[in-house]
Image (tube, rainbow, N blue to C red; front, side, top):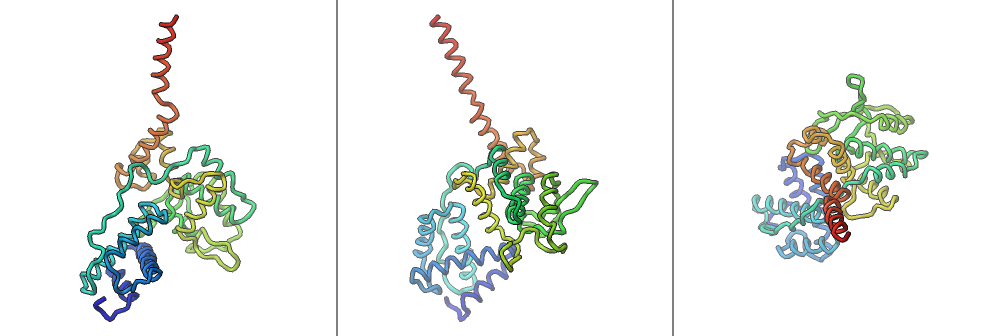
Length: 311
């Protein structure tokens, strides 16, 4: 680095100039810390890495079995940081031209079937507070398609009634305000009452918290994702394409299967464009072809004609 500033100061300067949400800034800082940690472990001076080290870091992440999305995300943060450093004259952009990994076709996450979703909810022991928390959390993701970041942001004061209907104010991904509402299923309302029954009321307090002794911190999205993965594993659903986001995909795919029009699905999912929503139409069509494949009807028709000829 051609500056007397230390790395923490440079990172803070970079983040302060990024036009991003505070949560995104924290995510960038965390991902950049992984890069510096890898450099240290590899015996490389964190102030003077070379281009080959970025390539080696990318290859290391791939060998670790990180998803293509994760690898691209981690490397992109490194590229953004060194692009800033070059503009400031601190160092050359050692990550310039490093290509993102090519994503294979297909969906990154799979939805659950309605039967799998039911088994998932029924597997949770709600006689304990952690079970009541997780049952409510998974219900919101399955019945309302909430993302993990949207679940993380829920406060006790976000619940209300509108025209006699129970609703939740949601801060969507990339938004700064809770300016959308979702209508709650009666089962969710019941689970909410059970979970918060023994909690002191504070409108700005987080809904989902850690229940470890002496700890009532807000659950962050990484923890929420880990909880969902653990709950899925408990019913025998362990697959790289099954995660917390699968619950959101489940909501979208099942809406399409129930005949909900695409504009309504778009609004329910919080999408700004129906092109994004098309994924759920494709998921529903693939499932329809899987269980009601026209090839069976064609095969039966051919075989029936063959049997008549044999007669």
